[in-house]
Each structure stands twice: as structure tokens, then as C-alpha cells.
Image 1 (cartoon, rainbow, N blue to C red):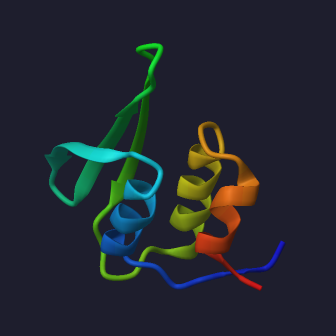
Image 2: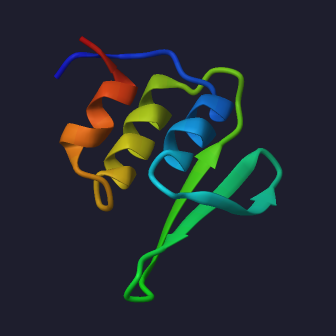
Length: 81
């Protein structure tokens, strides 16, 4: 696995918007993103809106997102290869 990029919360909003996720709630510095599939299933991600996301947090968000988005599509946004 390549080195993780330095990403901000706004970068993550932009990345996940490409996959159809939209903000639905905000509490403090955390935003809940959701997309609804054609069959009605809702998929939810939570991200932090920090200027720079800590590497451990970024890995956790990446792992969480892999439940819904194939790694081949997501990897190029998170890793600097």
C-alpha cells in the first residue's frame, strides 16, 4: 500500500461527492455523509472537517469507505503512489 496523501476535511467532502455522498448532518467538526442507492439502501460515512486529517483517522475513514466503494476507485484519491 502506498503512502497516504495529506487531506483535509474539505478534500474528503469533494472526494466522496464524486461517489454520490452528500452532507446530511453536522455536529461540531464532524459531518455525516449519505447516499441512497436505487434499491433504497442508505450508505453513511462520517468524516472530520479538520484542516489536516490525522493519518490514523484518514486510514479509518478509508477503511470505512471501502465497505461501499471499490478500492480500485477509491485508492487514487487517498494514496500518493
